[in-house]
Image 1 (spheres, one colour):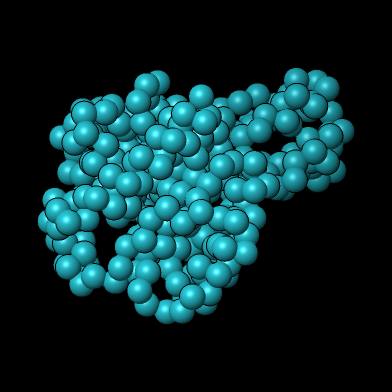
Image 2 (tube, rainbow, N blue to C red; image 1 turned 180 degrees about the vertical axis):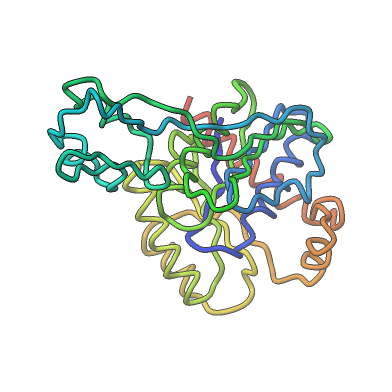
Length: 284
């Protein structure tokens, strides 16, 4: 079962929940893997402290043009929605940083002048941490091919047990790539006006993707009741509430797991696991 932990905005506690959930599942004797798809700034390793056993270079295909075979028809330029390849009179120019590696330009080229060349975009680290299988992506500084690297990381998803996907924040292309294909999405939010605004966007995203989902409210005892009222109005289940506990922030600040630093919170993650297992049975 693949469970994506996502949020409409950053700073909601997504990684805290994802890493602690993975650890709790491992402590329960189940097979579990944590995948950090927040490849621009992965931080799950700070808490899980994995031993990395393998690092792979990730690369994507970008177009290269054989000027001698190109007849300047411009079909490649007309197809590309990102202006990664443009035709100016008889000259074709490519912009690798804009390329989404769809391969469309190669398919529409009537002369076969466009072929693929590989360009590195980052790294995929694989390892394990105290019973939790671990994978993360690290995007090269200055590179913008975030969805491409997320796709590479997800190729290493385990075939059995639970896979906890720590998605990037927001609702843009990287998040879509991270949650795509998940069996369940847990949307983490906070009871603030910004939290509610971005939760609405995230709910719209998962509904458009037709993915089953629920909500976790972090720092649940601050702010107002607008997030809960919204969830009630939209018939969205709230499956986890974590209070604004200073001890959690203190544990987080030194890279400690909440369920280990504060054993009283294990019950919350036990209840969350039961809810996810019920969902898994329904999906099966």
